[in-house]
Image (cartoon, rainbow over all chains, first blue to last red; front, side, top):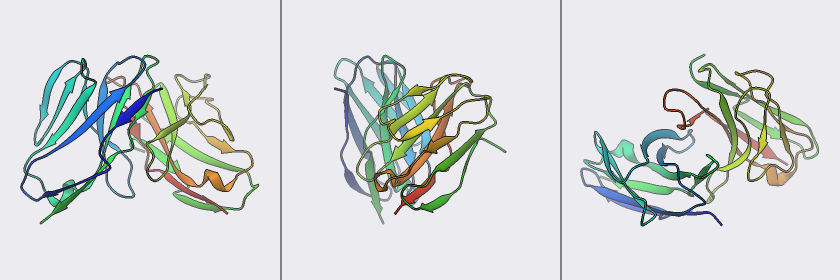
Length: 109
Length: 113
């Protein structure tokens, strides 16, 4: 079966750095997405990786290793507004998105 | 309209009633999707449409139906609601320059009693 694993919850301090990991086992791979979802709101697109390596976008970076079935989202200079759930999703061989359950990130002052 | 809209925002429904959730996008995206999101679970695909006139079943299609008469609209119908359909429903679309990136509507919170 297809499976996306990410930690249920993480806590970090304002101004610090946090890394959210995601491992996947899917039927085929056509890219990996990270989305941010604030409580009570819709998911919003953060990043897309299809090749191995690091993609940097401001305070957020996303890394992919296809051989290891592994990705992480790195958030730097954490702000209180970064408190949200972070969803990892893989585009499978049928171009359907398979979603992880999300990681709830709590930022403390 | 800018992006994707959904209606209603929330609804309380008696079991056995019929309900249609509306979704409209103005981005001219070819593909549209319906997901449900339940606490502790990832987004689960209910139905999708790759282009107007076609639809397909996702992971959890039972009890739901969809239609895609035109590019902009993708309604989701619950023919006879049951309490297990209590959830938050998100509509999404994709197909712009970043072809596979999905953009989400604000969601409909549905409670079936």
